[in-house]
Structures are given as C-alpha cells and as structure tokens.
Length: 507
Image (cartoon, rainbow, N blue to C red; front, side):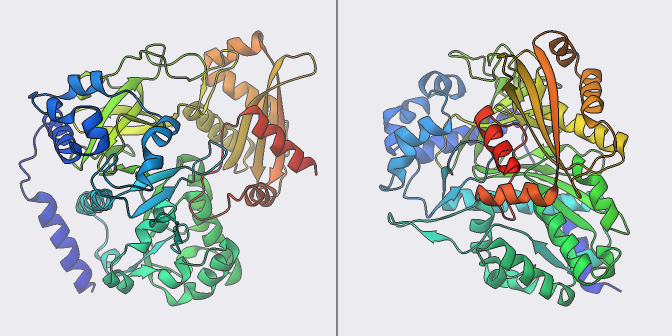
C-alpha cells in the first residue's frame, strides 16, 4: 500500500478544499496592477510614466493604459531591457539575477527576457496551485511517491559579462531547484547540466532503468524522442514496461493534440495530461480539472493582463498591431473571441505583447486555450489560416492517411509568375506517405476554413507539399542550433526561412 502517497494525496485534497476567500477576477486584477505599480514606482520606468500619480486612482487600469504604450519585445528591449542588463532599478527594483534566452520560433536571434527573484517566486506559486488542483483528477496514491522526470534545456547557465546568468527558462528553473528536489527529481542536475543534446539523451537512456518515474514534464516532441530512445535501447513494447506507475504528463510549449496518437502508441495505459502555459515571461495557466483540457489562468500571482481582440479591431490582415487597437479589461472579455495577450509582470514587463493568442471558454472559471501566435497567421491572400486551424488540419490529415504527422511547417511563397502558393513540409517517421497528400491536405483545409476555400479559388494559386523524415527535420533544427529539450519547432515560417529550409533539404 502506498502509505506515503496516500498521506500526500490527502494533504493535497485538504489544501484544495480549504476555504480561500478568493475575490472575483476583476478585483484580483486591479489589486495585481496596484501592487506592480507600487513595487516599481521608484524605478526609471515608474518615474518616467508617473506610477505614483497612477496609484492615486482607485482603479488605475484606465490611467495606466493611457500613460503606458503597448510594447513588443524589440521596443521593450531597445528602450529599457538592454539597460536593465547593466544597471539596477530600470523596469523593476534591483537587477535581475537571470535573463531567459527565448526558445521561440520567430526572430533571427534569441531574445533576452529578464527573470527576477519575484518572477521565480510567482512561477513557484502557480506551480503550487497546480499541485493543489491535482486533487480533482483522483490520481492513484502511488504517483505521489514516485519520481518526476523533467526534460528541460541545459541547467548549465552561461555567465554574462554584466553579472547575470542566462539560459532558457526551463534551465533557469531547474538551476533554482532546492537541494531537497534531488530526492524525487530526475534526471538530476548533473545530467541536466549537459549542454550537448545528444550526450544528454544518451545519459538519460543509460540511467532510465534505475528510475521509478510517475510523472513527466516537457515539450511533447522532445519527450517522444526520449521515450522512444528508451524503448528502442531496452527492446520494450511500451514505456510502462520500465516505468509501470507513469501516470501524469505535464506538457506545454506547443499544442498537445497532434501528439496524442504517437503517445498512445508507446504507452500501455492512459496518461493524465496537464497542459501548462509557461513562457520565458511567466507562468500564466494550467489545466486544473478533468472536465476540460482548457487551462485556468493565473490571475492572482503578480501578473496583470489586458486583451486585444485578434480581429480588425486590433490587427491588420497580416497580423500586425494597429496604431490604436481596441484593448479590453477582464470584465469586457467575451467567451469564444480570440485575443492577443498583454502582460505586466513582476519581471518588469509593462503592457508587453507576448505574441500568443488565447480564447476563453468560461469566464466564470477563467478557463482558456491557446489558439496560436499573432505572427503564426497565414493570410497573405485572405486564407486566414490560424495556428489552431493548421493544427486541426494536420490532425485530420494524419487520421485520413493513417500516418502520424507531428512536425510540419508552412509558408506562403511566390512562383515564377509572381503568384502566391502555400509550401508545406510534412515530417513522418520514415519520410513516406502512400497517397496523394497534397490534394488531401488542400481538401481538408477547404472543408474547415471557408476563407481558405475562397482564397484557393482566387489568389492562392497552388499548394505544394514536401514529405521528409523526422530525422531530416531534426537535422535542420540542429543546423539552426534549435535542437534540445525545450525547442519549439516552427509551424508558420516567413518566406525567407522556408526558402532556406528547402535549400537545406535539397542539399
């Protein structure tokens, strides 16, 4: 009998049922903004934008929106964060101990996102709330006394000449694990600090039989590589042959739906999937109950949110922010509407457009799903393909051809007559698809998106598909220095990046 597991499980249930006296979301958010303004009022940013005056209002949201402009990364970094690397008290009190190198799929080089001690504390508190909400899943007691496998980026952080350490956010979090985490955390800091991905993979596979894993954490594409490597090395039919109590999978970074079937093939019993929204800029939400795969937003953890409608009220047809976009407070948000997210945080991000789009399914419970990226929006000729629609199409295509496609990229290119076409690159295990995948994909996209169907009858002249192996796909990522446990593979590419991809494949 799992005595320790039962004790831990009962403790979680008691904690979850303890009255919290929680206020409504609107009140929480006003308090979060006031707390952020109060903390940063004497910083350079706070003095420049008159935070002390803003605090005189009982509801400072309106004055705050009028005073502080919307920032994307490039503007925030150029005007403020580049100074935050060298000097204290620029956008947040003190000087950040860490800067996260983003592992996103846009941009030509890594972004440096400040990570303060307050932000690390915020992330830990969201994580504690996630653990409390595990009580609603009725997990077996055994899982609470098993080890947790966390696939992060390298925890061997680089020392910057300006006195801070830098690395990807998952590596920063592992670097800050307290010593007592070693009791249950795997693969352990020694392996986690191996910077070369292939060497770290080999070390994990070698040690895997010695571990008793109940939970795994990581981006699904790279977790799959790890689990398949373990299965291959020890000639297993399922990962449960070596980790029989593996029950819980905390995923994030990309949509899990395309990976559900590949995971089913390497497991012999269902996994409970906990989707999370953890970015370099903060921990914003997690799946909190079995009733829905949608996540609960963290409204009470030193983060203030605003919402820009992802339509012609906020963006042009290419996904670029309007000069004067409509911006909603929480109480103005509508269920079923896509919004670009603005955040103000305890790491010194202010009205910062993180680049993700979300949609609320329940305002009462604060439940939402990530629907895509503002720049992962293929609309050069009115096709209006969001990341959500693209993922949906690839899932339907995988089922139609009975072949798993989890890695893919698409871009709008021009042919020799200066007409637009969509170029797709699809990755399967062996690089083969038996039937005419081009017409099948085109047909599915027309069925699920009427705007795409109209575009195909007019300005979108063609669809071209190249099928490659997953090995070749990962070789491209490695050539772009994008190989590792927390790298998110590009879905919608700019034209120049797709052309570079095609040249690599041709070579």
